[in-house]
Length: 159
Image 1: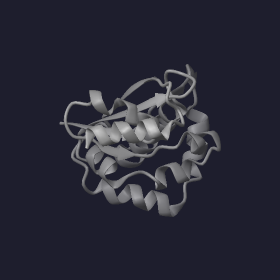
Image 2: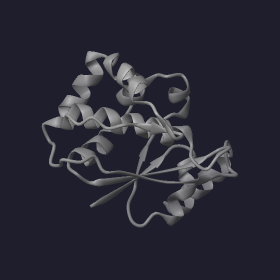
Image 3: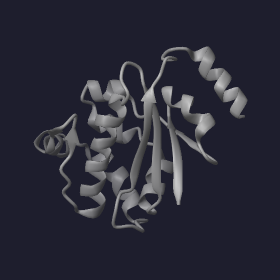
Image 4: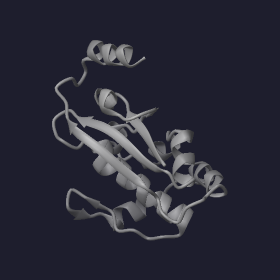
């Protein structure tokens, strides 16, 4: 089963094209820029984590302000994928960010995660019904970055 997640805020632009129901998630590009990996995982939505644990394919929609693929996707989702594979499945994956192998860096970041964050991930491990983390992305550039009135109109039309 496919579950659709709109990354706030620019992902709202994708709503008219999403087939069926969707949920919201907030993977912050600024957290990636600031290398706040523990916060990134701690802030993850429970519906998103449960869907992944149950083996659903989770499609994350996000639009980039100055590029086709926002940092929340190319770096944030890559770290989430790395951490969940390691914690839930005991798998080592080779993370690639902008064509670079970042395994050593992500490994160092993973080792610094707090017990609180690891316990959050462990909570969902007991519900695992998969041997694969199924994450997909749908991205595009946006011309509406920061245009909250426009996003509000999209949300109003979709409601």
